[in-house]
Image (tube, rainbow, N blue to C red; front, side, top):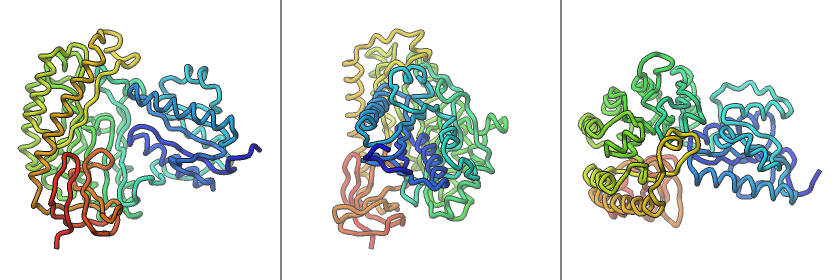
Length: 435
């Protein structure tokens, strides 16, 4: 045996989105059931095996995954780790090319066949339910994946190519998982999917997202339910009634809009136009007063001239989204846009537009946060650092949204506290525990 790595240890490194993270957590649980020492996202991987769960969504994420695999290949040559395995979206999409380019990897898997890695290890029978996993998030919070795949086939997006058609999980199975996680101390459920809006259509021939969320809200111990990655076209409006009526369904919706210019939306094959988008946003805000909307936008898509970009910028300034992310268009292999549209907008123009959009959003975020000064908000405590507690409101998803700093107070992690806001920054609130 080569020196330097720990026999019986398996390091799992998860790249990309929270949906990938759930798969990594399921793998970790099965490794532990075999009696193996499993480590997640270690800063110093030294396992007999290192499994990389890759991301293949956009260029930067793909490059990050490949660079990590190459670093591990060097660590393997030096004897600091044993063998390398790769799973996830990148290998699902580019398996044959990667095998040729990185021969140091010992085993390759895609996004859906990673169980074969377990079958190759001793004591392959683990007798676990499909959803069982080891949480890598704080014990009071979990991501809850309710479906996989997407049927939308937007022009720019490789997700349907990687994940295949939309496939919902049965309501009963999801509720069983929720009840199990509540029993382990989880209070906050961040519901995720590539397309929340389509939940239930494949299994039940109708939208069932509202019914699912309503039933999750019935589970005793569920404090917060937050919805991520809804699609604007064919949006299930009934979910808004559930959000308004149920106190433990957060007034928060993550819905990627991408653009507002009709010609660009048409090129993107988004199945929705400007008028319909504006009507949807108006209805969401009317039905759920006080809702916080997070969206994602794109600059530099083929056909976005200066007039179309100005329309997008005006849209952002008018709508004043509470949370917003954006990225510059990057052509993805085998997508409709890559095959049919000319990616002729210079990268510096895409980036300039992106910077302009985000500068506008920073001003909006500060304006909205300043409206909270003097108000008392409910905060879920995440950690203690630098003599302050740090947490999030119901309007803030972990890792991507603002946090609340509670000055000069050590509060119990995983518990809720009422905090009076004293100061606002664009992406941070500062306050003290209400007395």
